[in-house]
Length: 295
Ligand SMILES: Nc1ncnc2c1ncn2[C@@H]1O[C@H](COP(=O)(O)OP(=O)(O)OP(=O)(O)O)[C@@H](O)[C@H]1O
Ligand SMILES: [Mg+2]
Image (cartoon, rainbow, N blue to C red; front, side, top):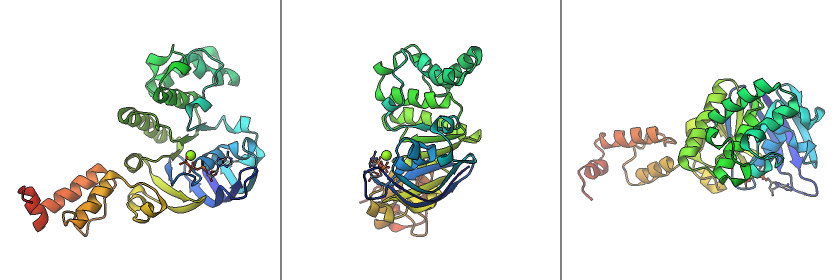
């Protein structure tokens, strides 16, 4: 669904490349998480897949970017955005400012596409529910909290029905419950065949929701693979990527002899419980002592 071949990109006026030889293949319906330290190129990669590079951010682009069969360089941004939706990190970049209410905001893009009114209203109601903001439909987008604005920004993209969804830290301003809700909605979309690329810092969420993790470092693909294989990699700390609290707990457990040496480090809560549970019953003296409450 998404193919990048040896992509190099440098922002206008910069000397260092923000993307440096990125080659990636992302399948239809996949959820691909992008992680990496600040400045690694996660947002830039989203802009590149979405066609904002090079149509909005000019600079120098080399290599090939093909999304849903279209070479992004050869199609205008106005056409690309009908198929590929990008939710910017800052929701205020998404809100048009041309409309008074959230419902009208969601109508904005559809009106531009000439969607008939009845179909448009039904579609808006569906997306309002999907993203959990039906109760905000008559509010001004500007009087909402940051987290609510993030949901509106996501809804304004989903309403267009994109086949490819690019999400740049879509829940950075949401609380844990709101974050879970939004991720559940994203998972449901991917099950219906939408391809998702997600820049995200929260390893617990990536482990639960992503099919694949791509680690970017200094504009290059540093590592990629299934969350379980990538997220417990000790090298992540060295490049400044946070590991999940479950991995941290197991590392500490390993040092204290309460995590089984042969067990791979966990990236999810379930794996951590299984590992610590196993240790508690394995006859490991330290864990036996811990179980009896001794120090
Ligand atoms: N508009 C821009 N003009 C010039 N350089 C930019 C621009 N946006 C980003 N950069 C540079 O490109 C590189 C990659 O930045 P990018 O924002 O893609 O990283 P990121 O992984 O999204 O970081 P963060 O975790 O902070 O969001 C950095 O060196 C950054 O300074
Ligand atoms: Mg970014």
